[in-house]
Length: 171
Image 1: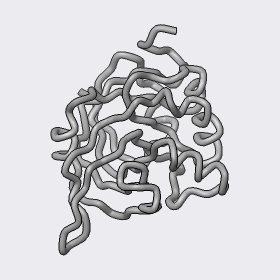
Image 2: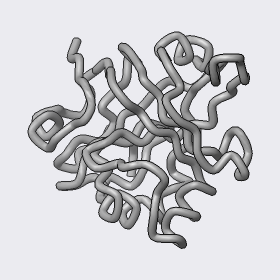
Image 3: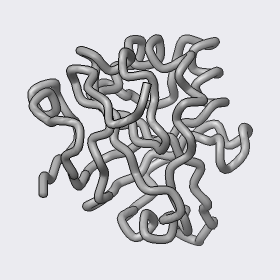
Image 4: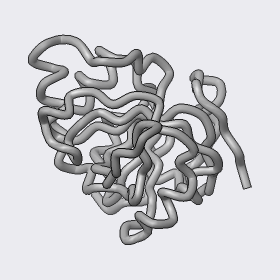
């Protein structure tokens, strides 16, 4: 099993091949449809994503005296972001996208990789979240907000699309 830690440079991911499983530790940032749209319209994202990981997820969180706790976090369907993904990755420097259902493999060729997470495992995903570091754009709603998370051994995650654009998903 491969273990990766963020931030992830090209050299950390370009050798991975579609079909391999990994675990991921470090900082992961969530972003769904509304966050993508706002970021591209405003030409800014609330956190630095350079060499980062973008998780297509809408976590369920609860407010505590010490901040936030993630109750559940699982992937959302990534193909909804296909039309925005290339510009988003280029503009903000994202190297890894986590989601479910796959995306257009051409988006990732020479740019990054797509990691698939099994849907329906949001309670398991929450166990990997060690801390909510920040939350932005809560005005979009809890699911659409941008959550900056410290994770430990998030996974297993399947390399669904590798750096060469090889994909496990049918075209």
